[in-house]
Length: 170
Image (cartoon, rainbow, N blue to C red; front, top):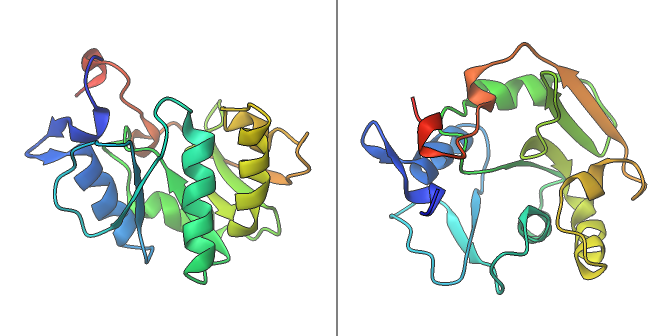
């Protein structure tokens, strides 16, 4: 898109403000992983800075899971900021699913890796994958890393829509 998606504005609020507001309804504490030097608005979340740009979401996930584990959480909701219609109800659906899986993902015809519940103990696994050169969330949840993943089948819904280009904005 040529600009930081976190600071895109929709209906008077940035994407990151919208996502933090939705997640904060069900999760505490909330962590935002930001790029080095990335300007963010005032948020009711703890900001953790990536040390390197362009490494992909797996490194940020490892960092967030580690922070959530250090805060005493066994599971964490991991999401991207490019989902401006994310809702607390989506988190409720995933949490309500009886599961012993390491990862619980919504599936509406495709996996939504960055809108799922993850066991915080996966922080080390994710970090090891990054150290081995992996960048994709798929590397963590596809089964080759020994991670048990459960999919929750959902109808297509606005809360899971991610915005990758300006044309995707409503």
